[in-house]
Length: 365
Ligand SMILES: Nc1ncnc2c1ncn2[C@@H]1O[C@H](COP(=O)(O)OP(=O)(O)OP(=O)(O)O)[C@@H](O)[C@H]1O
Ligand SMILES: [Mg+2]
Image 1 (cartoon, rainbow, N blue to C red):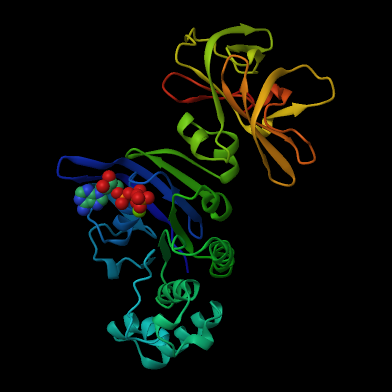
Image 2 (cartoon, rainbow, N blue to C red; image 1 turned 135 degrees about the vertical axis):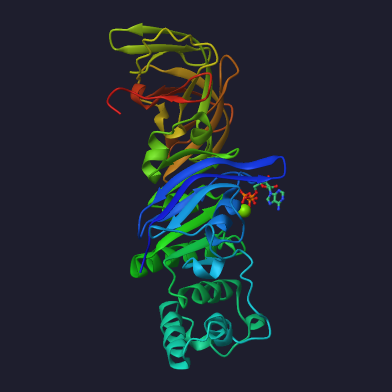
């Protein structure tokens, strides 16, 4: 069972403070959507408004075509899983999972059926008689998810459910969650400020910043075609290199852009409305500007730090004008600090952002 979710012109204010400003978003039935953004941008607030734990100041929220922002949480058909698990310490796993259903007076054998089915899905059947204190963090998290599953909600809402787990368990639980989504086919909204979690789990990512949605897109969309400098800096590791533009000129093949660090490069963009280059920024990801060893032309870079990642190396260096740049080198290269290397970029891999931070797009895009 899954449902679409519509958020229309939703605003949230605490007194004079606006936390979310005119947010609109359509989530399809069965979609896995991740809210991603820096701390304090309003991710939890938006999720809590869908769950009914916070009122909306303006706008409407609908689940499966029915307006819910005026309904109490229990009547919205959604279930929320928190970072803190919020399990009852004096109850066993089974009691923790049954409790909410007993409260609404569900028949005992139906409760039993749902709890056993959820326990099997989550592989916690052998833990049903244990109390939370005797569970690992990952097991507790699965119980918390189990408690949501037994409600058979139309949508699951997760608020950073993995952030209390250690790195290895986090990776494994992330995979389990993806499999769970595949199996249940339920609508899921997942809040995180971890871009790897967002990239690996999401059908679509909603990138939020400063009260607004910056971009909505598939993981590859937001990575390859970031709509703003903020998105470009937030998605991808290492972060995209940014160089201030000092001049630009339209040529037959597109916009030639000059920066102090890389000189004049062809970019394939077209800016024909007479906009000035003032305040514009050229962007390039490390993987698109690489150390060349085959005599191709490029610009010199002095390596400062080399990070060896096995399949590739990241070279943190400085261009002759003092601009810092991260570039990629082959995993087998022997570059070390203080080496002078030549780096070369793929013309069509450049990103270009105007003074307002919005991205220019190439015509084919
Ligand atoms: N009850 C409240 N009263 C006043 N301001 C609040 C209240 N709850 C949240 N805020 C503010 O609303 C903004 C958004 O908070 P929210 O918890 O939604 O952020 P978040 O994106 O989930 O951040 P994090 O990644 O740290 O969890 C913050 O500036 C926060 O201080
Ligand atoms: Mg939060």
